[in-house]
Length: 260
Image (cartoon, rainbow, N blue to C red):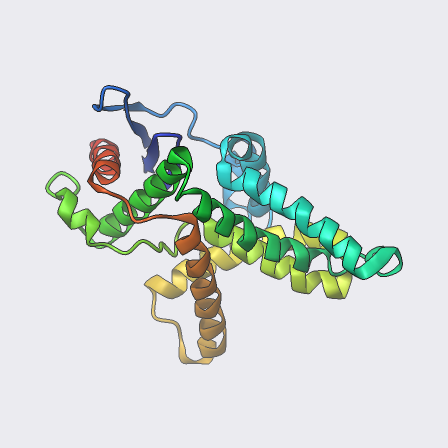
């Protein structure tokens, strides 16, 4: 399942079917096919290891970032973090740039924190965070084996809000990997490498969660689970506990997406 949050609802893709559901101004739930769900640059590269990462992030940047409050907030926080870094280190040390990825990594979490804070005062930000939480709960319900046609709002509400399969995890992996790789090979060279590795780590992490790894992979298993827990902290900032109205919208999308 692939999910995406819209301004007042969510879009879900299950297999070849993609639908979108949203809360209209009259209070009713409107749903239909999601014709623009596919991200540009993904396509044939989806099965090519280490190339699918840059293709996916390029697609996200072109289509999703301009409409995402979280991405816009991360960009603003990143500029603030870089300006502060330049003032603290001074021109001579900042010109090396090896600490820039660390500043951006901290800025990502700062942006998520600011978005969560905005959710308490802004109705739009609150709706975005709540629908994101509803999407995660529906995803957890489907993976737990619940039939969306029979599930009720209360069943979805009981699910956890942190989804280890969420794309937020890849953003966390990318910034963390970029921060550490930037110290070794430089930020510019490390950036595309971190993007490539982030998707591979994300896919490997999903296998670790669903399959029982062999005993000699225990260290890698522990490291991946540590990254997943770190990403879960970011998800708690990027989501809010959804109410019945947001869960109802997510459930409608899941029911339609699960139809033949």
